[in-house]
Image (tube, rainbow over all chains, first blue to last red; front, side, top):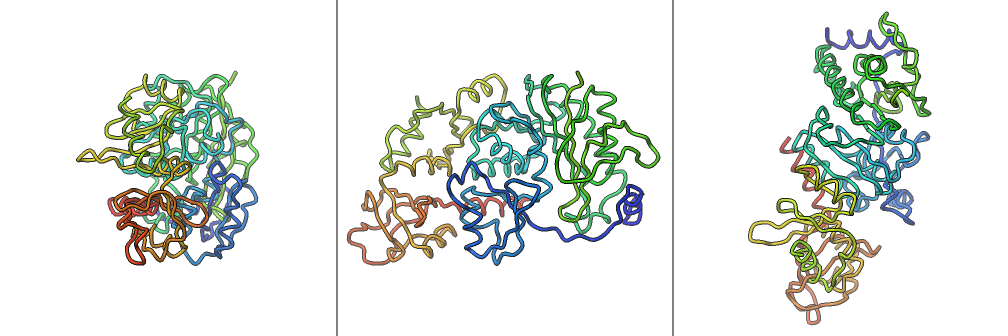
Length: 293
Length: 165
């Protein structure tokens, strides 16, 4: 069970006709570092053509630039980050992040951690976890470049988050996933259904651990850049049925998630998740959860 | 407090005195961090962390303190020793090059050989720091400030990380 035809047929059965996409680079302004400075206007003065991403407050697509936007003085000073548009959505789904204690369970390389710090205006605490040493280095470089002040980083598997002995107001689960063809031209050649199953199992373990450390009135956002329902709708269906979690309505870019997947009927509340098919952005899936009362 | 002394000792090189009055300076391995009360109590109770709060810098072999950029930016607000460079010199500086006299638009504070100075672009952004190579009063052209650290370091780290992966 692998190859382009296998996966494309699955997407068709989920209601999406496959088409090649050209991914656009995007940036996100770090508002905590640019007070009073119009970094977007400045980049435009430098000749960078930017288009506001309509569904993001601080996101801009890079339409044209004669130089790398990841090598400007403004980038190095932490005025903005290079972050794909769909990847900017999950952190924006939380309500009221100020002064909260937030878990970023699979944090490296740190784009979303910096975004959380920005949304929190460096208040409260972010506990950022990851296991890969090199990716953790990248995370710490991002925190330094973007002048994040409210984060503590541990080298810890998200499946062991309860070892910290903390309960969290907000949890971001940007879990390891199979990815999608829009960000990897060799995706269909590289990936098999066995990878999807392996990732789905790992994601369930992370979800279960996160449910343990979420405060009773807390919020959890689950996100993947996978298009495979086993890593998305089926995992959320499982979480709703076994972990005492419920989905929450979200208002963001994307399509209502299907509640019937390959003949399997899912919990009706799974429709509240958002599935983002590749096009304007890469492929993505987001869902907001809370504990059932 | 010893930890604080190391960091403030570095700041004094730029004419900045006692600026770490908010927060707690904590040493973790060879690295120094500035924590608020919340982070301090959280990290104290919970094992070995890698990074917390504001990274200030690290002491490397030989006991030399290497500042972080957040520390340089904090010092920059009060530093007496500073030079402002033109656009070309600013770009060359963040590419790791030294500053030549012809690229300097303004000098504040020390002009003495061997003293440290921060390097700013004409928009008032701190790009890094260096050591004055020759007495700037007498210097008409040639090497003025030797680059010790510039913000282009982030790109060099990113490139190195990609090569290692």
